[in-house]
Length: 95
Image 1 (cartoon, one colour):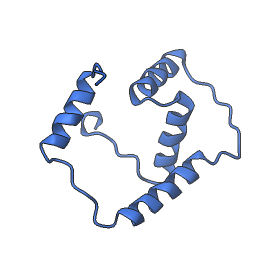
Image 2 (cartoon, one colour):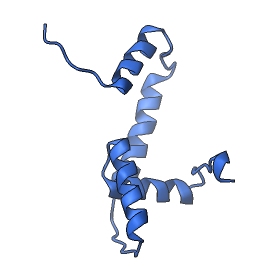
Image 3 (tube, one colour):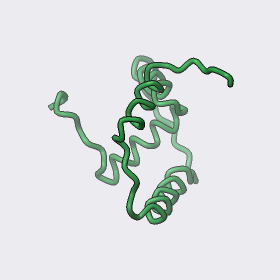
Image 4 (cartoon, helix red, strand yellow):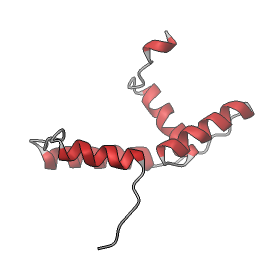
């Protein structure tokens, strides 16, 4: 059997699953369908926008995107979408 090196996050995930912290969703097919629609709506891009942004902010966005494992443009689109749909939640440390 091939051994893989796991990073800290992967080890924590395995420990969480093995500890029984994950529960099956009752309405799995409904949840899958709903999240597929979210993905379609998020991924559908039919307009182009150009904005000016500070290099520091762009660097920070790019670093955050790397942490999330997604392209920075996708992260920016997601944040804007959450903002306009009222689903962007401000953290208490920023209030």
